[in-house]
View 1 (cartoon, each protein chain N blue to C red):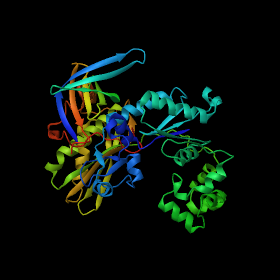
View 2 (cartoon, rainbow over the protein chains, first blue to last red; view 1 turned 180 degrees about the vertical axis):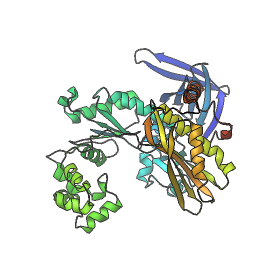
View 3 (cartoon, each protein chain N blue to C red; view 1 turned 135 degrees about the vertical axis):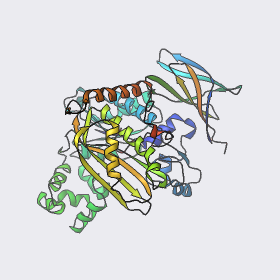
View 4 (cartoon, rainbow over the protein chains, first blue to last red; view 1 turned 90 degrees about the horizontal axis):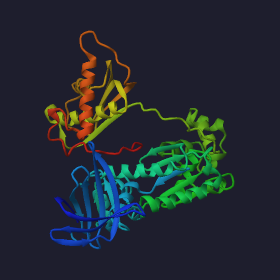
Length: 86
Length: 392
């Protein structure tokens, strides 16, 4: 089931300079750490002049839509999806 | 070369969310029982779910299907990534829609490597650089029509060529409706004139085809089927439009005003952003009783300001029958380049133009609809961003 969340979240990010790729390694949400095992898509869009980064990633059991506003550097968890929860 | 992103919106969603991969999913205009499916995933297509199905119909076929609403930013981003990658191969690139590209390799250095090899390389790079779940079908031939036909031969993840060696074999396997441009009407025309297969179609003389289609279109088909290029013209923008299907029927103007204002604001913003002004507006409506009404009119002067466009639209609205509206659409036509301004005797056009430009600048800087008419309040979740067929 997909759930709209929209709340701040802690995120660990790694930048691999050789592959020039940004990867999310862990998400801490409601004191529960999630190890990210699958990087889905990193896309960006403009909201006015602010560049918004959207990281769609997944742990083994749950997927997250994480949004980083490049002007404030605050991470927001916008949505989760748990296929086993109905 | 024709490149087609397979089940575009659904595949991009599966790329973004790994937990949705290899499962039947579909992107629908609205996630409600009557919402229309615009992109079923490859897995959903295998179950028989097609574009145009209602969500409730898809759920009857597959109760577990996951329905998603469109995320246009994501699709535009993938489109731009793909465009950037393809531009490395040829500068003669034409996006036909958000998920289709046509590449002309005439004179491009890569042409010498062989287009099937180039197609294979593009497919590999898409997986490595854009998304490992994204697949494209590539078609190669001597004209756009045959390249598109080739890209449809094997889906998903195809790479096919139609050339002078294999065209007879390909034509003998295809049905008339497999050809892009042959719908039910054209099929009836061809069948009633004794053409039942693609091979019959190919063998028909230009004179006979001209007689069947009653226009030069017959000659075009004769040439297209023989691999000649007749579609290498630049498409020119002729209009801008927005439309919105209302969640419940609306009869009175106060109820319709917020939606109408937002449609006009969006259209006006796109018009000015593309460097145009307009001298014609059009209003269309579909009613609860399934009847439709539309009217367009040329305006006396060239307009660009959303407020002026709204006034003209309102004039048209007052001529419409007072019935329950379920869908409303606005558009503007007779476009003129924005640098042409007709000065007026009794009003300062430049002052007004400056104000409009400034408002657009604020909205560009701080986000769409930061400054907008008060009548548009409470429309945040209505008239959402959409990608139309054939547009990006």
